[in-house]
Length: 484
Ligand code: HEM
Image (cartoon, rainbow, N blue to C red):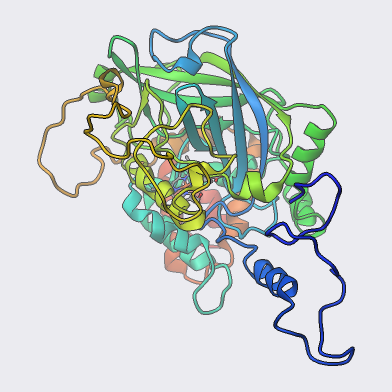
């Protein structure tokens, strides 16, 4: 940390350092002295340089930029940062892979995280999405088990294709995301050449309190480009930070990547009658039913000055909403509303929002006090409880989330509609013959190491139900015979 102007090396308590190359010893050949506090401090701080890496999405790259409204949709949402064409809001994005550790390769087959923090005048709004519109599972209760299958085996510490395909084959709701992941889009050419999605359904509420359901799509202006699998494997060995480097260099040379943000909007009453549950994150809404409506443009024009301070310590939470944007009953989203804040308190600390990268530009005014690493004036002597008779901060009833009706019995129940096959089948049928051939080759390559024929056959059954040709080709590629 450089805080003085005369370039004088200091200890962390600001005192000048006399010697930073030779530790203090008892005699020139003697043992080191405990009183060399600069040495002790230097070694001790070094031991504490790492915070826990994210339990998922550990490898990432980030950039600053801005979001500009191109189409005013304030008839649907009162979110102030979305109202008024030309309105600009500073933002920060972190892209990531999901399963690998923080030093893992960028060019692996994996979804890419697409986490955006908008620093709005009404507080930070985090849209913590991926580069795919759907997800493998649709209930938060399955997430830790799912991620276990993506991570390393507890004994061998190796990746485990048996676990991956065992879980997927027993969780057929994963088929849509698996098909996207195994397609060309599973390995983007760069972070600039992919779309981003909020994936879940969210609720927008306007100034009159009227609600709609909404899905977000960030469309890349660079065009979608993907990596050839052989090149991706080569790059994984030669330049594991290929995507990180590409993003940094593009911004550094003024080639600022941009995305157009679109939404799909569903009237609330349609949710009861739509042909599938619109809160099921394994499904996309038809764009014929709910066309894309442009909202604005996101431009990344500034690299972080310090990776740890800005990218590693950034904390994004799907629960960071601003007035006009609310949760939907999506069971994955509901679990995520808890999981991220909890991860941040563990990984960065209870006061993670005091850090410059996470600090809102909106004034924070509440009765939270103290806690480890409190980096504010901690409220000074101002009132620290409510209700009070001292004129403390008060709530704004107009910003209460919109009231909504619930009904039914409390119970653990699956989603109502169980069609796992129509949308992945439609996707398969949309692909060109070359794309289908590559999809089949990627799946066969990924399933070949699976030791159990039972798992393979179960999964082939799902591909078959999506489209008989799809299933047959995978079976042939794996040298297994299936009867229709
Ligand atoms: C990161 C949990 C589903 C996108 C994380 C982290 C946790 C987590 C604990 C690490 C946060 C941190 O340490 O800062 C969960 C749970 C899920 C879920 C419990 C399901 C119930 C999803 C879905 C998406 C997603 C469906 C995308 C639509 C991301 C992204 C990050 C992330 C982009 C990285 C954020 C960053 O860059 O800091 N998730 N996740 N997750 N998750 Fe999820």
